[in-house]
Amino acid sequence: MNNFMDKDFLLYSEGAKKLFHSFAENMPICDYHCHLSPKEIYENTQPSDISALWLSGDHYKWRAMRSNGIEEKYCTGDASPKEKFFAFAKTLQFCIGNPLYHWAHLELQRYFGIDTPLNEKTAEDIYERANKAIENGDFRPQTLIEKSNVKFVCTTDDPVDSLEYHKLLAQKDLPFKVLPSFRPDKALNIENDGFKEYIEALGKAADIKIKTVKDVIAALYSCADYFNSVGCKISDQAFNYVPYREADKDDLDEIFKKALKGKELKQKDIDRYKTAVMLALGRKYKELGWAMEIHIGAMRNNNTKMFSSLGADTGFDSVGDCEIAQPLSRFLDALNVKDELPKTILFNLNDKDNTVLATMLGNFQSCEAESKIQFGPAWWFLDTMDGMTSQLKSLGNLGVLGKFVGMETDSRSFTSYARHEYFRRIMCRLFGQWIDEGMYAYDEDILKEIIEGICYNNAVKYFDLEV
Image 1 (cartoon, one colour):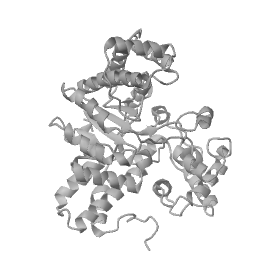
Image 2: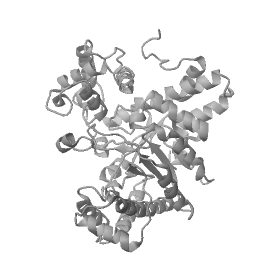
Image 3: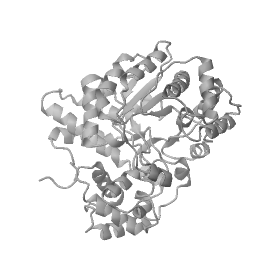
Image 4: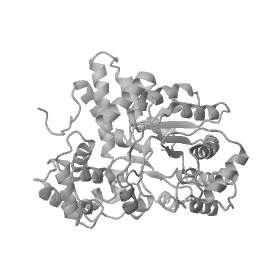
């Protein structure tokens, strides 16, 4: 029996231990996609206790607690911080096989120096020890980011955002950079409630009176130029599937007018609008030299009752099962045929699509960048040991794994950087296995370049970030 999550956790061979401790363990972090608040980073407030640090806004933990039969008041309600922590501890002990169990204990070890397994029996002691560490130590956001050896934080920001906190942070002498990412989902989701109000806000932000789809695109271009001036290098779009359905200008404007009047749209018309706007955005991203992230496969807000009560991003999303290959191929090709395809990272949320995306990459590569089209890391519901291993194997089988841009947290928590360590251990475990089985030659120089590249260097080069 191995020791519980010791220094060689997940590293079951001498080769894996060598790869992790020599090459991966101390590499910096480029967190190129997350949901941290730039305002919270700037204000840099010390958390009041471990519940505030751990449980506020973390829908991963809430989802597990609900599955354990915990009342909602202990997740998002008015229970005391101690009651919420105890409810989480009571849940965690049953999360055998869940990455949440590993993440929580890595965070206890790295940020609090606590090696004791968290469960109902140890909750009182760990709650007191963790809160004492917070009381006597520095757990402010900027300190946690620096302590985690993070060099770049790329937040997720709406086109209408003023980016005031990014600009304020840029004036500070920090050992890391906080950069915005351009997330135009609200301008794309023509079918959603509030679309008309959002278009009004977009027009105001860009100082454009929006009457047509051409105006929408012009406004988004104006906002993208502003984001670029503040250091943005990345765009991000989320779809259940990537739409591709062509339409002429008059049809698009008629669809747009219907949406502004609150009329119900047919799915084909929704797809036509999104296709036109996304093609225009792809061209702009190529012009700016940005990378285009596309997250595919989330089925959101399934629980109408809880969505009405708590809103979005509270733990009621799941994996979709749409067919994605054909429209994705046509979308990428429509940009590529005109030399307008930007660097692109494709993320899938359903593991049935691993081979689809891993093979799609090779259709559109070019010498403009090493692995210009990337297979994004396993995320959200695939951010597990099996999910990450499968993604690495698929990319290894069908692409050039050594040029992979690696892990990102996709998180709202300032202690979630332990997930990078989790990924690195899983990666080194897999690579060590391949080496031990004679499937890859042990050349220390080449392996060092591959592992350090996947951990950090490839992302910095791919996104053209200034170190």
